[in-house]
Amino acid sequence: MCCVLAVFFVVDIAADKSKIIILYYAIMRRSLFFFALSFLCLSVICSCSKEDVQLPDPQQGEVSGDLPMGDAYILDSTYLTANHLKVYNFVYPSVDPYGEPIMLSGSITMGDDVSRNNPANGLLLYNHFTIYRADQCPSRGELSMQSMVTGMGLITISADYYGFGVTEHHHQAYCLAHYNAQTCIDALLSAKRLLSQMGYRWGDLLFNVGYSQGGQTAMGVVCLAAERYPDIDITYSFAGAGSYDLPETYRQFVDATIAGMPSTVISVMLAYNEFKQIGLSFGDMFLEPVLSHIDEWILSKRYTRPEIDAMVGSLAIGDYIAPALLDTTSISARSLMSALDSDNLCKGWTPKGNEQIMLFHSTRDITVPVANTQRMYDFLLSKGLHDVDLQIHDIEGTATSPAHENAALTFGILILQKIKSILGIAV
Image (cartoon, rainbow, N blue to C red; front, side, top):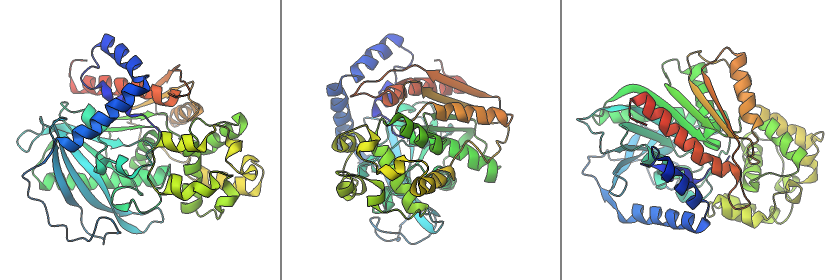
């Protein structure tokens, strides 16, 4: 459900184990983490320069409100000097969580080794992790993963998801697996058309990557590609610590009475109640002080995940979730569980049969229980898909650095190693 930016500071050092160890322990020190994060933000602000690119005249209205439906177009283009990263922010047609047409936003990025005269090796669809603050989406500058693969000859495509970018005034569709996957596939198809129109070319490789909420979305993309998009041939999917079986996740939280990141539990309940139209009031779902601060803490998009969790103040779900929802036999809990089950990726679909997938998780994860990955693995095997690399690791966490976040570093290193191997780059 959530990730950590720390995983993406492994750029250019993945081949040097001693440096990785040094980096790992450095990341554990929060002072360095926040310094690095601040430096990243500052470098993005200070090193941007507009490219000399002819952009279509949008003529689509203000980006702060709903955009009239139209064709995909490039919103702006930026070159990040410090990252050697070319960025095209774009707007594309898709649907909202109710199935109505809407324009969404995302980003296309590439390193200096890709140009109109130098075709890319392939594409990488990056499905981002949990975010809450409005400026954490790809089109607003959160490009950590995109920077990590710079120099590999890949073009990355990243959707903001509904509720961020040009739709940030709407409530985010948090962990709606099938819906978010649809918006990412729509972004992929629109970006390919825009890139082709701009004269870019690329090879046949397509990587599908995501951790936490992004891991769930990545497996949703695999599901939708198998069901509806026979022409989308994914070379390799990397799904880390995703909530593939939300009903089981909820049951485990109730049984354990704790959840590693309260903000994610609250956000799942808000999204499913809103978009699956369960009909519960905030008072049916939450206790004080959360009840009186939903608008400010969550819906305002002013705060990060750690800030929201600190304001909630407890990992014990009984401290902020209404008692009726902790009784899985109650009417309200059964309604919620039924809605969650409608997005259960561990049932109801059949892989194409040629998918190559890495599933990753930590046994110590109390934010997204490892049972999610085990259930997904068992499901894929039951469907006859055997080219699945199951990576279960025993990665510990602390109160200030949860196992869910710590494991993201290992996941990022494994991604780099595998992609480099496929591309024939020395690991």
